[in-house]
Image (cartoon, rainbow, N blue to C red; front, side):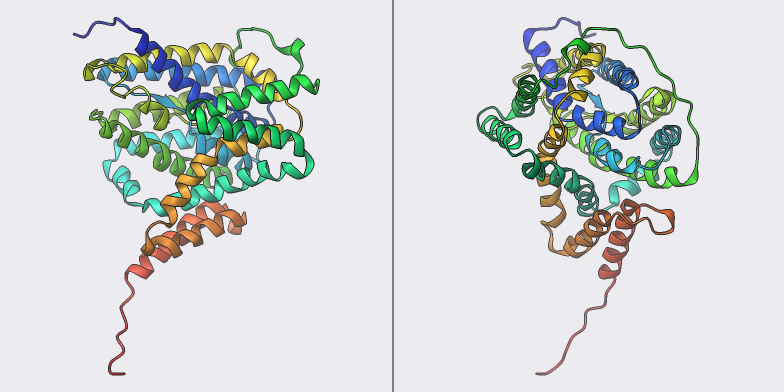
Length: 393
């Protein structure tokens, strides 16, 4: 049995993995929770629950399988929720979170369902993500009209740090934004204090429209952009983890803890790779210890939720939009490349993107569902098309 002695590289890798994943997307989570109409103390509670659950599941999976398994919230899912939750009560949204967890759980029970999801062409799902992410990025860049100096300062910091310290670019941009808030006297330092958050439970309600328009797109986005990518990263580093227990466990926890703010629980991908590199430990079988350290740091960050939220809610107007736009740039580039790099998918992908961007709610069904449906139907139709040969010219 492996001992649990940790070295400095395990601790530093685990800490960096959480910092990279957390700082690059926490603004999106807070933005989405604010759109749900939650008060600051409720957001504190839910970020605390997210940190605690992600920490426990990361430690549990990593220790049991002796493999660096990082769980996380879905960054594209959080971006999707910013606009998707508008017009629905918080109770309805929580009901949708529970259904999303149920669908993940069912994916673990029914192997053909997981396989069917994997067969959805990745350019179609990437186009869907483009349609979700692009308006948020545009919203950030349009702030140059209303807040030109603030935008140019943050843009300069982001570009310079991206060139020289890419891994920490969002962290340093966040610190610069706090400096701007201090300079403009909008940062409420009196509200920034260490206080143990308490759990806030919100009783769910279940209605057809939020299930169709929130739960199903959130499930598709999470499974295709996070879980499948997470398994791909594990395989890339020659780690083997069975699919079934991951889907069953994360789905079950998602269902149970959704009323406390767990909107998604899935495998991390990019940040997880930080715990798998050769630099972490020369012994391949000991790299899971870095993920265990990450789990501990997740819980620590959750305890600091009140400080994190107090800083973000007192940022100057428009600054949160700028940060969200920068945070999603890398994801947008990756999605655009994947959506349009293959000739045979381009027209189907552009239809998916345009319909998702349109924001239609035809028959009460959201643009995201219509976009994927039309994109898939178009691709299948084009595949079955009989070539026409014109003889003799």
